[in-house]
Image (tube, rainbow, N blue to C red; front, side, top):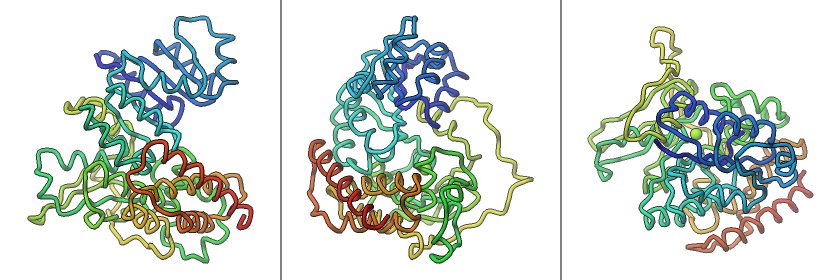
Length: 384
Ligand code: MG
């Protein structure tokens, strides 16, 4: 029996993780759950899965639930509650599916407490890859990717020697605006953006997929997970999202992982690795499959990818600054306060303004994140 804590249990990845748990009650027990504000959904999760601890980081939501709940689960609120859920003693593996920079501190707390991580919060590695990978190594715990592309890479790397890898090939659907020119992107709305062609996800990541910032963040994530130089990580646009990513080896062989676009497969693999469990997930139907196509990403229009490569190559605190500026810009876009293309301007100008700092501690990263949010906020006033 594996004890699992889920941070972000009411979001897209969190609820799908509970789907996996539900189908394998003999394998998993839920020890702790944490969410932000969704007290009603969290309460129904508590009733179904009986964790020892449940947390709402929003204090008002936490006290709402504390007032009406009469069961045995301990209910806590705030950031301290979240850190407690991350380090909860009975847990073996923590699924980190919080959104954005907010996932970093609880992931570090989980690592400090010696937990294995099933990582769905890519921003953690973007912001603090060096720190997080070092801490995991010191603690002798594993960080297994839940991100579909990185799970695909992980599967394609099984049983191979790392120094025989020529390239990691990260596939990318291209998002809802693939093929459009800059002019055609001028007036796109939030609604246009949220119509992702192949995957159904949370709002922030759906906007990131449209800007290709998501793919840029994934390049940085892959760099840290697999200790691969940026020159050996290549993005391939593949609109059908059937090939989830590939690894090219030095003899010319390319290994690919294919599947339907269902996040429950990477979640289950991360939780049961090295065992492959049976599943009821839908199967690929080769007789009714669209033609699989591959193309080069257009980085002149979708500048997010190049901005992320540049920040990743620079290293230090710049990926943290890029991430914070993106979070601020995406939030403003979702609120209708910023145009789609101006997301890139906010990111670019914020990163250009800041001097890099190398080998940052968690404290320094928090400082840089706060600075970048302030600065991006000021830019918004001017550009928005
Ligand atoms: Mg992904």
